Image (cartoon, rainbow, N blue to C red):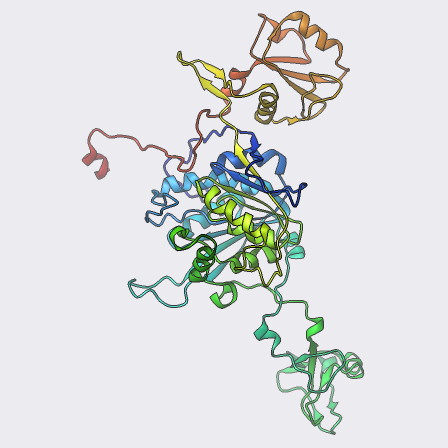
Length: 528
C-alpha cells in the first residue's frame, strides 16, 4: 500500500522459517489423576516452535491471550537474557504476535504487559500487525507502593496493551467488574426498603427538554422545578411510576429534591477503566511474596506479576471454561490463576523453570497447597489437572555429507503425524484404508511411508481410491517417473518436500538473532 506508515528495523524483511513440531506428552510430568479428561496444557520449549505446533489445531479457539514478554530493559536477569538490541527484540516479538492473533476467537482479546522501555515500539508493532482499529486501550498498572529513591524519576507503573479481534463482539461478552468493598459500603438502607441497600443519584439532566420541565411536589409538600440549564431525568409519567415503585428518595423528612434509588442487588457491575491501582490489583512486592511462599526466598523469580492483576484480566475477558493462553509463562502465574478461576489454559515456557516453577506451582494448586494469591477470594480448595508436553525433535537432520535425512528418532506414526502437521493436514488415520492417514481440504488425503514406492504398490492404492479423491504420498524414495504417473496422486520425497518451507535443526528461537552487515571500514560505516 502506497504511503503506508510502518515501523522498520534491521532484519524485518528476512522471513523467519519455523519448523512445525509435534507436541509429545510426558506422562511422568503430567498431573491429571484428579482430572483424566483435562485438556489444560503446560508446554516446555521455545514458544515460537510451540505456537507453531498449536497454530492449526487451536486457530480461532483462544478467548484470551495474556503475555508478559521480556521488556528489553538492558538488565541481566537470572531466568531471561533481557539485554536485547531493539531489532532483535522486534524480530523476537513479531512472529509470535502473528500466531497469537490467529489463535484468537472472533470475540477474543490479547493483553500485553510492557513498560516504558518498549511500550511505544510494541504499540506501533501491534498497530501494524493487527490494525489500529483493533486497539482498545492501554491500562496503567500502578506497580509500586512508594517511589524508588535511587532513581532519577521513579517508575511507578507499567502498561497493559489491549487489542481485540472484533470491538463490538468483545464489548458484548466482556464482563463488568464487581463492586469493591469500598464501593459497596456506600450503599445503605435508611428507609428499610425490602429490596436491600441502595444509593441515590441526581434526578436532573443537562439541557432543556419541554416534556421534562414539570413541577414536582414532594411528600412533605415542598415544590421543585429543574435548576437553570437542566431538566428532570425522565418525563412525568415515568417519574410517577418510579414514585409508585418507591424508587425515588425525597430525604428522611420527605422534603428534599428528588433522587433516584439504585439498589445494590440490581447493580450490573462497573465498566472497566484504564487506571488500575495497586490497592485493587496488587503490586510487585505482593507478587514476590506470593513467589516466596511457593518457592522460598532463595528461588524467587525476577519479575512476577501479582495474581490479582491476572485475575482482573481473565475476569474481564473470559468466563469459566474459556481458553486462556500465555506463551511467556515465567513462574506460572497465568496458568495458576486460570486454574483457580475454572478456565482452561495453555502455558508455554522455555527455560528450566518450566519444571522448577511452573510445574511445581500448578502441582501445589491442584493439591490445594497454594494458600496465597487469589486462593481465598476464589474459594479454591484444589483439584483439576494438566498435561505436560515437550516439543518433538527436529524432523530433518543432515548426514555427514550434508544431505537431508529423516530423523531416526521418529517412528512410523510420529513421522506420519509430523509430515501431516508440516503439510497442513489433520492427522486422522482411517480404520479401513491404510493410506488415509491424514485429511486435508476438498476430499484430499496424505499418506506418509518410509518404504520405496513402486508402480505396482501405487497401482494398488489407486484401485481403492474413489472418484474425486486426491492423494499426496510422502515417502523416502520412489521409482523414476512415478511422481508423474497419476493426475490424482502426487508423490514426493519427504526431505525435499519440506526443506523449502522451514528451517530445520533449530530448537531455540528465543532471540531470532539477525546479524548486521560487517563493514571493512567501521569508521566510514559509522559516519554514513
